[in-house]
Each structure stands twice: as C-alpha cells, then as structure tokens.
Length: 323
Image 1 (cartoon, one colour):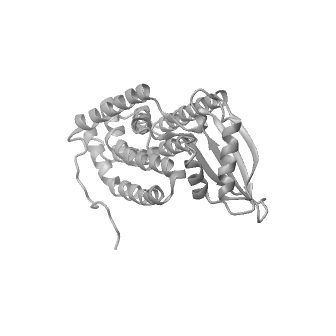
Image 2 (spheres, rainbow, N blue to C red):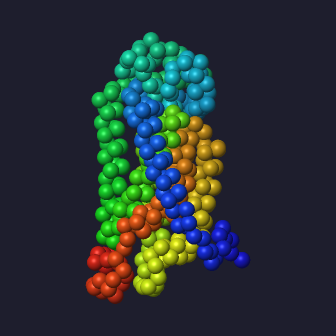
Image 3 (cartoon, helix red, strand yellow):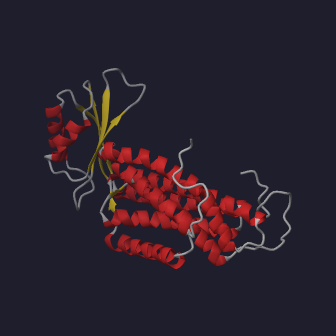
C-alpha cells in the first residue's frame, strides 16, 4: 500500500484560471517591491554593524539565561549563539553575543559593555569577555553587496543551465518563477518587519535551489511529452505534464514542510527567521512551479516543428551535455 497525496491519474485544468493566477503573481511582486522600497528591510546586526562579544566560562552556556539577563538592559537587537569546536577543552564553554548599536552610533559604548558584563556575570560568575570587536557600516555595506551578488550569480547560473538543458523559453520561465519567489519572500519580511540577516540570505539561496528543482521536474516531463504527443496542443501537453508530476510535487513539499514546521515551532529564536523564510519559500515556490513558470512558457510558445537535433535524445541542441 503506497501513500499518495494526490490521485494517480488526475486531470486538473491548471490553466482554467490562467489570467487570475498569473495576474495575482504579478500584483504580489509589484506590491512586494513597493513595500520593500518604501518600508525597507529590518536589517540585523550582520548588515547594520554592531559589537561582537566572545565570552568564555567553565560553566555550560545557558542561552536562555543570557538572553533574560540582557533583556532587562533594553539593548535592542541582540543575538546570542553558543560556539562549538572540537579543539575546546572539556570545561571551555564559548558564546558569541552580538549587539546592534543605538541610532546615531557605530558601536556599543564602553559603559554599556561594562553593564552587559556585569549582567552576564550575575548569571554566570565564571564568565569572562575573551574578545570584543566592533563591525562598522563599511563592513556591513560590503556584506549587503556580497549577498546581492550571491543571489544574482545563483540566478544567472540557473538561467544558463536551464537554457543549455532545455530551450531558452524554459530558462526564462524558470528564472521568472525564481525571481517571483525571492521578491515575494523579501516583501513579506519587509511588511512584517522581520529581521533580515545573513541566515535569511542563506534561506533565500536555499529557496532558489528547491524551487528550480521542482520546476525542472515539471519541465523534464513536459519535454518528454512534447516528443510523445507531437500533435497535442501545447496547453494540453503542459496540463498533462503537471498532472503526471503532481503527486511527486506534493509529496516532496509536504515532507519538507513537516521538518521545517518542527524547526519553526521548536527551534527557538535563533533559527526561527531562517525556518520561516524557507517554509514560506517552499510554499510560494511550489505555487510558482505550477502556475508561473509554465504560464510564461505557454505565452512565449515553443517550437513544435521537425527541428533537427543531434543524437537520439530529447531536448535542444545542448541536450547531450551531461549535467
């Protein structure tokens, strides 16, 4: 007995509300861009700068107690992480505490550092400050540029790969779906003022990989069906391809979401933003694979003639590339 989230032979017309689904996606992208540029992002310490404190103690790190002690000081944005390293001694317990500067300043003042140290030592008398470093706006600006470059490079590499593996129309549709997913996810972070830091950039890159994987599965089946059903209208071939891969799409998304929701609920504050970004990204990515990418390919059309292709395999002139 096999578990299926969708019947084996579905005949859903995914193009029935084609204008509504694609139009909604366009409106959401435009709204996300407006919110992003008007409200801006709530950048975390990674992008705003601040002070990083490395603490050491012979007692085990209690992140919850540290956070409670610092919450009473009203420091604003504070990130606390325990550091693990196999080279540490058995009684060497290390934590990294990052504190965002107040408005108008580039680093936390010496007086504030002394207050922080006293508050933490009240929780752990053995705690000491091993190092204190400040990250200024210049370094933070470089991190922002690097993050943008990473997103653009990943999207560009995906565009080239899909073009080489399929047709250029597939590449345009796939990349449009990826841009759709990333922009809407960023718009949600801007709208709800969720903290945006380097882990969120990692989550966005993960969304790109997950979404393109789902899209490629649909496109690969579409390519096979285009060869099998040479006279069937393109719209019908696309519907058939999505229906044939629907069970796989739902199973993959559902099993991934089960793990992510567990992280979102039980993971704590440290990874909650990361887990939320990937959870939302998978939902919107699954939607875009079904309702955005293929709609764009349908609007542009595909060559259905007897174009000579090298070799016996399906695809375009680059399809024999082993990638």
